[in-house]
Length: 336
Ligand code: UDP
Ligand code: MG
Image (cartoon, rainbow, N blue to C red; front, top):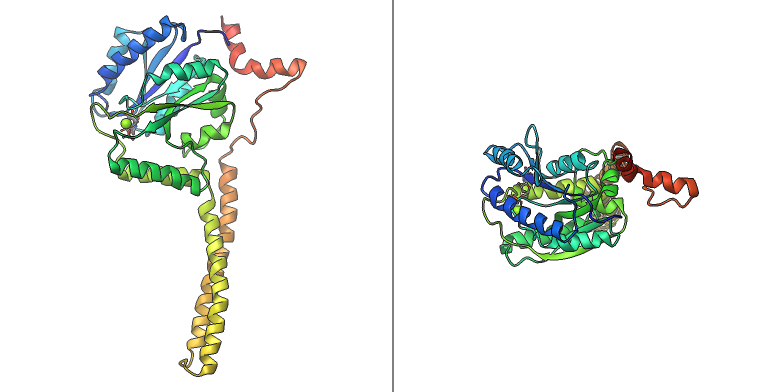
């Protein structure tokens, strides 16, 4: 790839009037230094996505764009769609005008100095660079505990996420084009991006405290986010029902044996044995059958998501190679 490339940073903003001025001035400084270093082209921009804020976030974004149009752009969403959708809206809007994108929160909890290293990794050939928190010193014990349990639980439940990586991430235009093929409505980017594949690596940084404003992710939203992540990525909960049904059915055999012993030893009330046997057996069978229905529901769920079944990374063929690589880059060539 030819240096310098066009970088678009996508920043979702929901009621962020307290932080936007500071964030934008730090980002502008960063952009100036990146341009000087020859890491990004002058056509690079920071895109603020206003996610239906109720405060003056959008008017600040408009002002920023007016003051420095060669640094700041803005997207205004019609209503609050949530962090993940706001990020996706930004990425899908810029995917055809940028070479590489970085997503980051508006509160600068992620270290913008990691951007240099991310870009270097990108120029070394990585298509995805994950920003990973090396320490959580600034987080409260509660936030640290809930967040770390979240990653562990996600793994157990079968959703493959990068440990301690949130949504601070570099993605090339190529990856954005593939991401556009995932049409699912329940979006969980942290799980989707590793699914896309391609060469990727991580950059480590220390997470800071939010310097102003307050977190838009209280416990309730965090739990909803975790449940969405699990149910969007794995049908393991459904499989667990089948397993439970199986165990219950096995246990019912023990209950049978126990009921017979009790009956013939003579210490069972009349009718107790048959009642206890049916409860266990029917309970087990019902759960087992529910689990089987669950397996089918899981299959239907996978089908309706219409995820791409494969993504071609390269095609070594005289005509084909040209054709495959044409997708993201050739448009630009024909444009210029
Ligand atoms: N955000 C958004 N839409 C929402 C909620 C949050 O765009 O409905 C943005 C918010 O402005 C911020 C980012 O998502 O840029 C992360 O939110 P926050 O910093 O409050 O979460 P935390 O870091 O506390 O998990
Ligand atoms: Mg934050």
